[in-house]
Amino acid sequence: MSSLITTQENLTTTPASVVQAALAHGYAIAAWQLPGSKIRSLLLCEKPVEFSLGQTFENLDTGFIIHPFNRNSQGKYLRADLLFTFSESALLPPELPEENHAHVWLKNTDASTKGDYYEGVAKPIEKPDAQQDFYQLTREALRLIQKGDFEKAVPSRYKVVPLTHSLNPMDLFEKMCRAFPQAFVSLISLPDYGTWIGASPEILVSVKQHTLFHTVALAGTKPYHPGMQVKDVAWTQKEIEEQALVSRYIINCFKKIRLREFEEHGPKTVEAGKLLHLKTEFTVDMKAVNFPLLGSVMLNLLHPTSAVCGMPLEPALQFLQQHEGYDRSLYSGFLGPVNLQGNTDIFVNLRCVQWHKNRLTGYAGCGVTADSVPENEWKESEIKINSLLNEIL
Image (tube, rainbow, N blue to C red; front, side, top):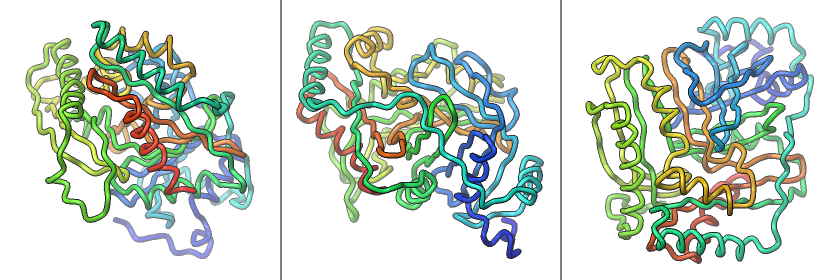
């Protein structure tokens, strides 16, 4: 790793000051920290363009893609017009062309200039009977599962938290980087979707050096307490079956493209974001199977996964569209950097909050199968939402 820049000018250049200057100049922003890393990246894009499912990302320049839960909605591709890399909050010297341009831009920009974060159009309003509404939604899912319409559905909900004092999204991002070192921590702010901050435990599509494909099946949720022996955690039959459904969904996607040469490892218990999950990993040597566009093909097949929608996909999705009662927007969509030094890391947008000047909105969903109990699903959703809010408020 290169040494830190130590000029007086750059000692005062923080990620927050760069973001504020970028927003003042009309840039869209994406900041992120990969699981297990202390390196934070900050991308500035002058003009985001549309990105649809079915497009290939392998031919894109280095950038960041964002897509909502709704398959038919348009996502966004943020090209890395400018790119900064930080070791925690210390600016690192440039190594890539995009970083060279960024440092020149920064040198000629007043970093004390402050712009406003984008708020977006949608501002969810807290429902007065949210708990009873979620019980009813879960019971309806159970009724249709027992009827045989689908095996699993993933109803979701949101929770609005009023803010009594000003919270800077970049400060929240840095808090989450410290609180959730094993998650994909992200901050995005752009005109169409506003500002979202998240700490996702779930990789959707990863491609390393254009040759190694990776995805995971993640399901089941328990609270994690310091000192717990992860290997001794016991899971219920309902949780084990739910995780098996997600794994089966991935394998079925492989079958659709006649891909049989993959490695499967798991399930095993993992800790991510103060929670425990069951996780199975799948890898494919893209060079060995001669499938250079596997990342884009699987992204199109996988989204939305059974972990955030249900199984079979179409009837579960139809149920959510008819009964969930709100637009998920970017919650349970996907986002992540593409083609950065040969690597692409796209995550499901879970454990996220939507920022507005006077409120935060947290989101969570729960996998409902034949053995689900509505009261337990509500408790699980509270655990998921509070695992995030308790760390940043």
